[in-house]
Length: 262
Ligand code: URA
Image (cartoon, rainbow, N blue to C red; front, side, top):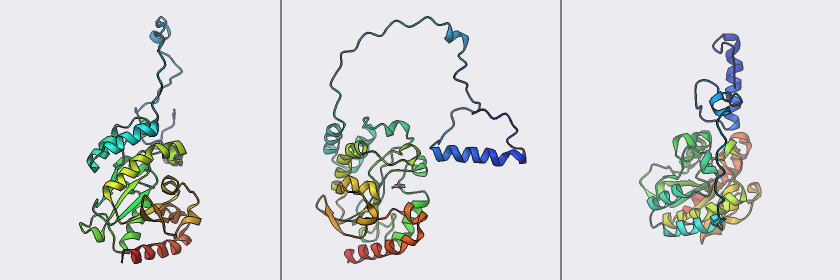
């Protein structure tokens, strides 16, 4: 984008700030150079370059099934470190190409409660840890209110937290069904390795991944079972930031979780 006005002039900085804010909303997280590049103005050297020889025809090969590749990689992982490596090496999800970090997990891996979220946002992509933005800070306060924190070494006083998707979708769009399907084997293995007593499904994406159902406002607050474990769907803290009135129901869900923990 070329802006040839003095951006620091008091009459222009608000417009510059609005333009920047708009780009952040679109999902822009980095700049590549200080000056804009006009990619339509080809340097003469390139415009005059002789055409390249045609590439030899490739023999088509059957492309690998992303879900089968994920399943094999996930099943081979015998520890959380190995699973982190397997996810980082997995190359079949387009989201990985647009993300800065592979966001794996946070919290106490011996905790009784595992929280499964949707996907990293901008702050998580920058920091490489799940739920560190505004929604994550609200989540920390919510769980602290029932005596659970990420940092406690006590399995009964802590939680472990991860997401269905380890890569940030562009512009924070919802993950697509095919993207959820290819990450599901990793989620299953992650849960098997942590082996929590209870799972909280935070928002719609984890309900789609583990229950094959959407409609979090209908599902929330009702205990069900997935992967042989009790699971509690809850409304996502990002939703609670937009709809504070829903915090009352979220509090009821937290109390239900606390009661279940005994
Ligand atoms: N929302 C999520 O579901 N996960 C994160 O890590 C951050 C925001």
